Image (cartoon, rainbow, N blue to C red; front, side):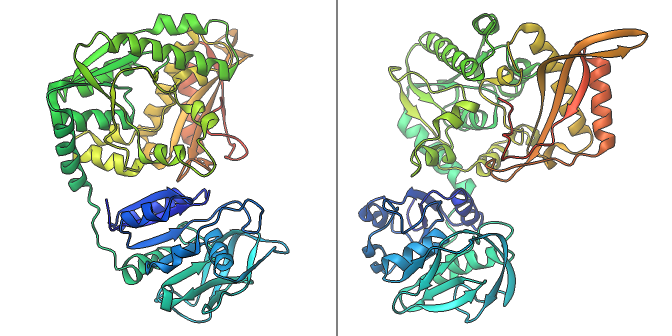
Length: 509
């Protein structure tokens, strides 16, 4: 889509947040690598360009830079953090190594208002994350705000605006106003991004591209694959066949729920494959986390490959790829291969002779959920918490077997049930139970027990890059602990994980 806002990615952890903030305004945004050729950028006819933050120094030997010509196209530019330092360096200013840097909250003092800062309080809190700082301004630029260092500069005549802080994060009190000023007042962008239009456009595109051919899709029951399946089914009906592989490592009764929710409710063709014994036999005695992930991923590929060849006339392979996956694959820091293996079962074999169909690849996660609701998927299904591709295989620490899976399924189901019952499920971002390979002595009735320890985990996050542990009420945790110990045979001790990310991760393996 043209006439949106282009965000050039210099490695900022917040670049996806910038894109989401702009789309929330009803304006299309697209994130591209910083080294995207200028001609490719211009072909998109952007109304404005944002230069994101980044972890490096613009004075480094191999610094990520842009050509000076970018600023000479008459397109408004907003430089954020690294983007401000980059602008200063490229246009002839000077960037100095800071004495101590600025991290976290700072006080912004506006000295001279401009179009970006119009209507913004003269003194407000902003979020800083930088070490270097702009020393000498480029010719033609003016100082607009300070925070102990130069915090905002601009050249209104050339429509170039820069801030040292991050307006996209919620900690910056007036950040939303600044982004609105840039998008609407400076760039004169139109509200051209509506998800209802996206559904209509995508359905038409799928019909035209697929024609009379068949499509297969690996349905997991998760949000992305489910929304993709319903969207494709809306376009081509029974030409779509979904393959649901029960790895034996899924949530309790997941197979039954998927068949009811999507097979019966949406009348979709779903092929249920019970491969639980295959997966568990391959995992027998394996306790290394990375090896478990690889085994699960490889076995999933083999099972899916076998089943896909049983469907005659299938030409397309559909996947629930979403925009953050696309961004990560083209990131300036390279694909996050190790991190992604932490969550996913891995890609499908390259020699599968299908054309790829990815109807959600332009959408952020929150947009996928909204599309799901527009398509009639029940609210509780599109707002499910993330579930890792390897499933309970990486929530059972140590070796995996059928009995441990049963124990964990029961405990996890109780925790999730109580979250829903107490109206807490959507107030936390991801919640689950982990089973430890640790047994301890307990007393149940008049008997001593020697059983497993379960850990309850709940985290709150915006982007899953950082997270804090959920401050769940003690009374609630007491109920969860009591129910798990009393109702799940095999657990006699429950702990609550109060680690944040970083230094911990949300998942344990």
